[in-house]
Image (cartoon, rainbow, N blue to C red):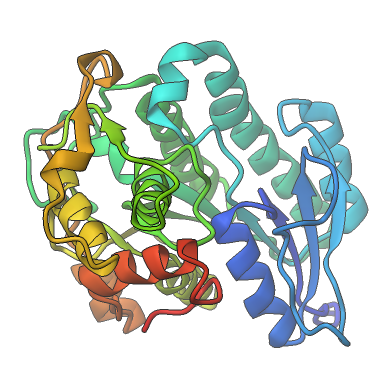
Length: 333
């Protein structure tokens, strides 16, 4: 006899991060039961949902503790796992390569293994969505990149994400429905301060309001494919709804430089002459920094019907306006 279908129950690792919070809001609004894993204290940024409605259940677990991670999977018994937790800074991965490998690589394979065990114990599918990164293609020499591009990372972060990506493909062969979203840069007012995008918009807001004079950056000619985080969460949800698992590049297909981001941010704050406020510091340049990372999301367009909706200028303006205190988080004008 086929077991009855279970209620949609999500386990979101990294629930208090940018993507985790947007995803949690979306799932709660759709009536899902949401559990999350976070290593921090408190519930700030873990998804707001409806103030009068349900809230996520947050489990305080260090994801590098693979035994505790596996135990949480068994306790929650999710129908879907959205694996978003990671050491997500390329710069930090150079400073902390061992921690990066523990969190991004070993924890990911432990999560896959726990989900496969749960699936076999329940006799029902456990759908896994893994957040990968366009950084796995950083040394490929191909631009734009797609799902067939050679995996050639150039940083500890990229290597760790490539491991999780390729292990997901192996577990898929074993019968676990693992899909990897190969995410390119995606931004919002919920982006942490450690990322260059948020560093820029917060500094520009401070300069515009007289609280600072200078924005200090490393290299500004590197080009990236920047999208809107809620759009990318929408793609994750569409991937989760597919009957067959697969890997998808999630990107806008348009590259902009850090310089473009700076110019757009100052323009959004009403400052035309940006050069006097920007200082370049060579000590902030990464050991390796690919010139162009831009994704070809043609597969997501054709299979999922997904497209990025927000323009680059709108994304930057939304972040600046939020940091100026004029706009609530999560909204593009």
